[in-house]
Image (cartoon, rainbow, N blue to C red; front, side, top):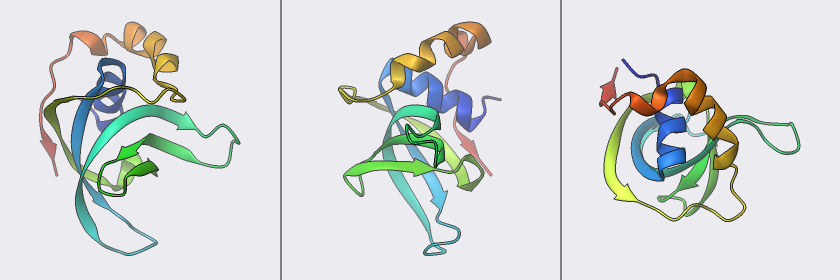
Length: 110
């Protein structure tokens, strides 16, 4: 089964939207379903935050999601135009190395 990180990378490179079930642990202690436009996985440019980066359509802004707080995800048939300042192109070597590109999206819920 594809991990949320692999699904995020694949969706970012292919510009496909994911719907995630996310637990906002330390902050609001809520579980929400969000449609996101994945962009990057890794450290922020300033090196302060690590996670799954993308545009949250619910918040209409770039957000960093902790992989361990994603309780489930599902591929959504929507395409999007990548953020011009985004970092998705940095993920292309990862998708090539790990053969994630040949793996089909599956829904994952816990």
